[in-house]
Image (tube, rainbow, N blue to C red; front, side, top):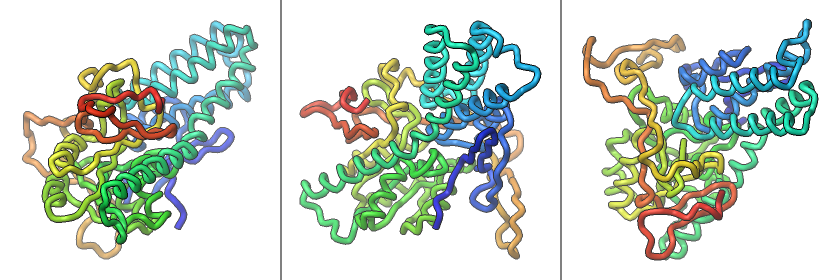
Length: 384
């Protein structure tokens, strides 16, 4: 079966699959402006750290492509100063769409550098715009290749670790993941889910387990859809059942993605990841983080400085889906599962897993593990 995709783009047409409607309805919606891109990220029609970097970059490329074709000529093409003011404003606006995922900032910084480099050598505005269009598309295009690289690094590292420990995996490896990190969260293949896909493709995977997190979070539903599409044997569990799973089943690793990795290796990921890490440590199960280099934020010393997005309280009170049982209709309904007017709702999107609970961090450049005798932090320099 064909892999799922989150973004479709052409010369100046940009579409995303509305992830709020998945897995029951597949609907692509057009992104016609940077304001549309901002709204899609803010309302979580698109999600996943790599994907929410690709979409803004592509929306900037779309905006500038249309600008080059416009008549009369837009004011921002008349001078380098006007272009800088215009692009800086757009990038600053897009950066506000979601605060935790550092990939978004990495993408806007790349475009800022392209802009400033062009200005510093006194390129004409149209030439700088062409550079920006190419750079915006490159942000998205590079994602698939690096995802496959990190998935292989992570998969092979786990296989070797299991071998070194003398464990029997003749029937394949069992791996647990949290949230969605596949093609719908990236530009293709995936990060943590990419590792699971790699193990499946190389016939080293027995079963993938994935958690159902807080009611409104779509991660488990999207993971279910992706694993089903790829025909990967899998089991969904509630996040409160992870401890029971570890007690009664042989799990060889927990693998997760990341929205931001601090300099010492502390990692922000979807809420519920910290719970899984604590339980994995208790059961001596390796805990692996798989994420692109752009997710590593060397300007943040540790996890205490990672901004954690707080979602609107109402989202924790609602679930969306199709009626059950039904007669085949696909119309979606949204229901409230709490008493109306409930106060005191704690609803963070992410938590931070300390480096002390992480066994390995993987990027497209390789695998980082803690030095012999080190328990608290990582040296990430070889993989960034």
